Length: 241
Ligand code: GLP
Image (cartoon, rainbow, N blue to C red):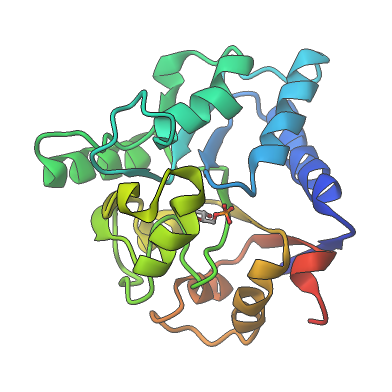
């Protein structure tokens, strides 16, 4: 794992944006695996800046997101569809048909999971997959105990994840109980993985990640078996590691 420790969140966002910028400049039709959560917001702002300055174009880029809540309307402010529109897609003139998220409102969720996995196979693998890390080690919404061979599937969210994400809702009861997530095997198909960790709430998860002990009880530990992972952590997350 290639490790980059930076001083603060702004630097983390800039460093990550540089990597994506270089990728798009060298390969304008890049496939980007995107993530939600607070962590990549600064990176998305940096990408918007670089787009506005004319340094990069998203005209040919295609995106595949990791996950989506089940049961939130696409235009619900906390759906990941709405998140991506607000934080990136609406600002970079990317054709809508080139952006992909699972449909958390599909009538037949198993079929939707299959459709999404086929899509990943068809347009993927992602040149780079962005990842945040849950404090319990989840990646995407693959909660502890998720099979390392899992493909896109429906997952029941851990109570700790619902509590962590309750800050975006009025109360924890409003946080959906289930989501569709790319599986761990789907994520590992990506050519490169860019894992971002910011703030003291991520230190314990990073400590466990660095032990390099692959176990399904800690989903992010699977990353030690991927050949091209870059972890960018800020000093608050890295602490005394
Ligand atoms: C969410 C997302 C993950 C994200 C993680 C951490 O539940 N499904 O993709 O990486 O939690 O989020 P944050 O960056 O807000 O800490």
